[in-house]
Picture 1 (spheres, rainbow, N blue to C red):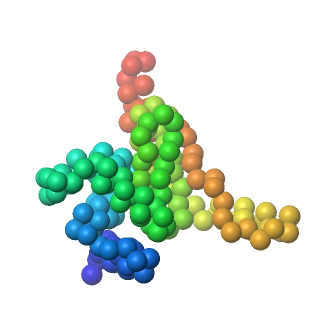
Picture 2: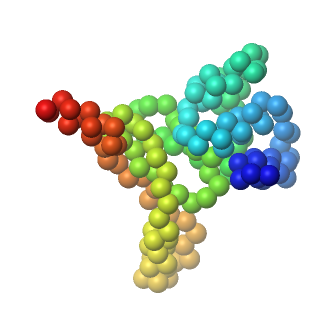
Amino acid sequence: MNEENIQIQKAIDTLKDSGVRITPQRHAILEYLVISGSHPTADDIYKALEHRFPNMSVATVYNNLRVFKKAGLVQELTYGDSSSRFDFATTQHYHIICSNCGKIVDFYYPGLDEVEALAEQVTGFSVDHHRMSVVYGVCPECQKKASALKS
């Protein structure tokens, strides 16, 4: 069993443990989130799956994403005025977002966890999480386009 299948199975087990019934649509949405490795909108997911589920609506996708979010499987990313994007959240990671085109890329940097330890040490709090999860910049593609325009 490959890593993607293991992640999907763990997510299904988590949902079942929460009393959530696994419908073919739910399975397909989970599978899409894991395999795509992107940060799709509900509409992106709907468009990718509508050929397999012609009776499924965008509302169905949103409702299932809400169920996944409540179960802790999905993180909703709301940046700027654009539609929410959804991220299959199995590991602590951060996002860097292009200020120009909106592209979102995951990155991992365990050193930020040191901030939690320092905060505990300095304040005496028992830290359970932090929310510094977004960095903004301009992606390589947009940098190339900008350079080409200047030339």
